[in-house]
Length: 264
Figure 1: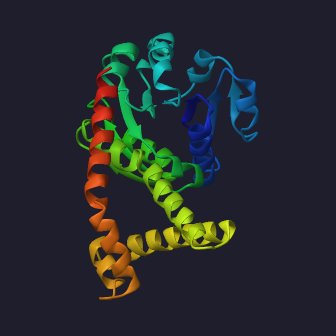
Figure 2: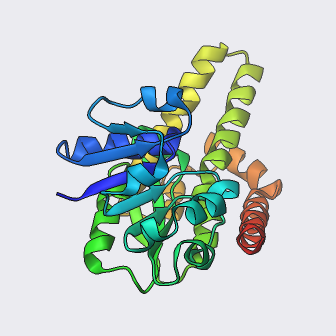
């Protein structure tokens, strides 16, 4: 049986390990983290380790769940220990070229961009594999990342910068919209708790409708907008305020920043 080692046991790593175990209770997982408190949060079926070299020694897959500023140190520390294994990176802005320069030029590397809803098994992850990754290894990566939501493979690594701008940063955009709606509801005299419940359930329901409907999001909007009604009055104000243009500028800004981080 293959085993998978997670370097770093923070929130995203914990979500991935938990999701992977839920989808495959027999999965053999090893976790390494310099902070014992992080390891103590893990299920007892996960083997815990405080030494990265020992953690990867018997594994076929290594998932790097460390901060981008720690990637070079970790990869150079492990060096040949991971050169012959599948390396999966969830570090934002760290390119495959950079990882291969630290871990080995012929290393099989998959770079992925998950988002925070992975913490509740509703994530969206974009993945890119270099030329050394086999179909079997891609399948293994899909099992791990797909255990916490949906995945999408991309042919070019540069597309991950767009993924970062849309789904990687996307949850914060929706949180801001929900925050603004809650504030407006409270301004209308509604109780803060009730305002929160109204907004969150509406957001959840709208997302579920959009996922399950045969119609585009544009058509869904049209379907719920009666001429001369309350929804039309609200949407007219949002459109006059430049909502669509502002979203485009925001996503372009996130895309530009992702490119800058990838080159730094």
